Length: 286
Image 1 (cartoon, one colour):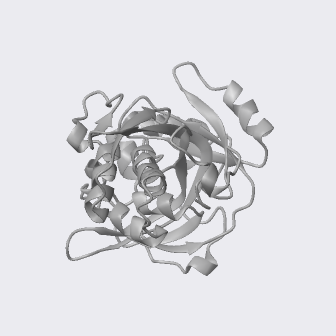
Image 2 (cartoon, helix red, strand yellow):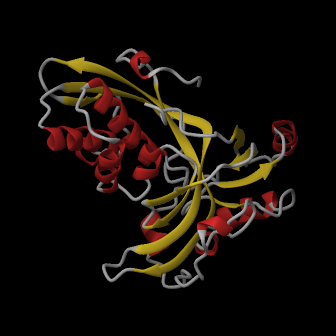
């Protein structure tokens, strides 16, 4: 999506909520409260959900197309809008339309990205005036991945995922496989066999291709279809790995044409697509 000036974003706009990839993901410790300490590099890609917003005169927050099986009060889009109102004493209402393209439980950050876009969009449309840093703090209450989508830059992240050192990443295309399974994040992070003491690195020392995903072995053992998809992808790239807590896998390629050639040979029963890396979130300059 082409960049727009801030004033060009209106209620009539389709607001993007891009996916992310974790170019590596290490668990380097655990806090006393049980939260895991992570190191990762987040990269945005051009595969997106999108949202539209319509103002309401009755002050209600309404989901036009609720996600199946998700109660409205548990929906991250609803919770994000409500959280912004509570933080700003705003009384405006809105109907939220979500065009869901990213898989749930895939490790691509779809729900977190949706929530971040709600916060960014409504902060702009409602003119509530919160800084991006304040929105990041609100987003952390919704989930560990929400702040990076508000932050809007490809970045080396630490802590529980909220401390950022921005980095420039070279252009790349990615083949992403989507196994037919929803991997619950909590099931991976609570697994006793999860590595929790990978030596930390300095952000300045990281280079593309460094590191792996500490969650990958756990997910592959508990959900064998993830391991099967990874094994197929590793035939074409030594950098193939899982993103987030799964289930999606990805491999970088120097060109989109190369990634699409591999995609053509995808075995029956496997699904995937090609996406390009973004230099920044489409709303980074909002």
